[in-house]
Length: 161
Image 1 (cartoon, helix red, strand yellow):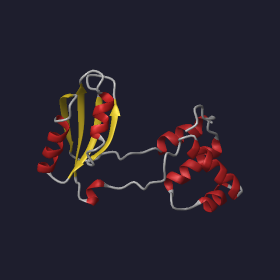
Image 2 (cartoon, one colour; image 1 turned 45 degrees about the vertical axis):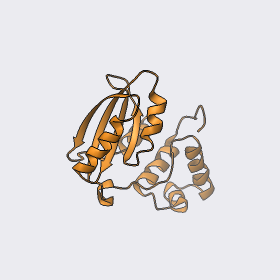
Image 3 (cartoon, rainbow, N blue to C red; image 1 turned 120 degrees about the vertical axis):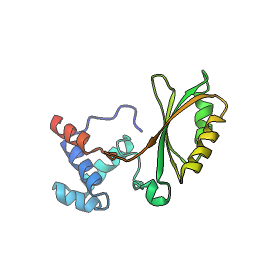
């Protein structure tokens, strides 16, 4: 990832919108829709990847469709100076989908997926057993009301450039 990415312009915003809306269309189709040469679309796409704007091209998968219908958010309070060691141990638990350092009353926020309530309890036990985890607070996700989205940010970006 480049240390200081150049500001994005209208073409970047339009290309990103196409990538988000139709990820399987391909560079040739993006170029056609944007009215630019294929090489231009490819170099812009490469620039966005190198700048970290597009971190990867992995598909978005639904944990419930994979057999993990129970999601929970877990907030951890850690012993001082144990963040890195706790994160390393958290990363070993395959059911933790993401972990973010946070500012506030807790130190780490995690999203996890489980097969059922018994499995969720096993995951909770594994987390609380990690040396450095002092306290855990959890919330079970009942239903996703607004899925992860990025298009509103792209719309705002496009209006500003």
